Amino acid sequence: MEILKIVLMVLIAISSVLTVLLVLLNRGKGGGLSDMFGGGMTTSLNSSGMASKNLIRLTITVILIWVFSVIGYGLVLRFADPATML
Image (cartoon, rainbow, N blue to C red; front, side, top):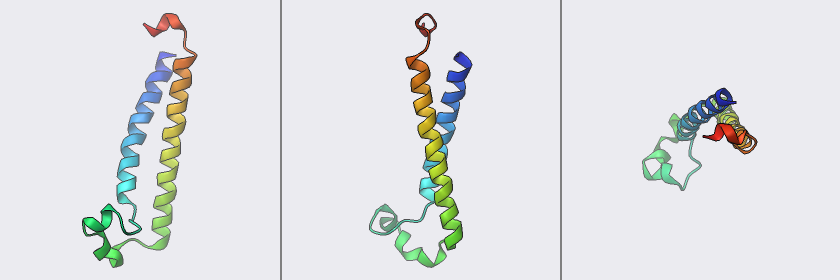
């Protein structure tokens, strides 16, 4: 059970970092922080439509991995043997 906790924590940490990076790579839709830092001026330099869709799909997949890892870690902690919680 301890190995499962470690694996889930590593998965949560990796997917957290990847989620932040992927969200920052996504193209802004306008009116947000991306325009404040000059994102609105580089609309012609953004990636193609297919690459953008694939980036969104990858971001959603990593977020789902994070969510299920957090739920799994919570379940492992909830149903762990109280003697091993020390």
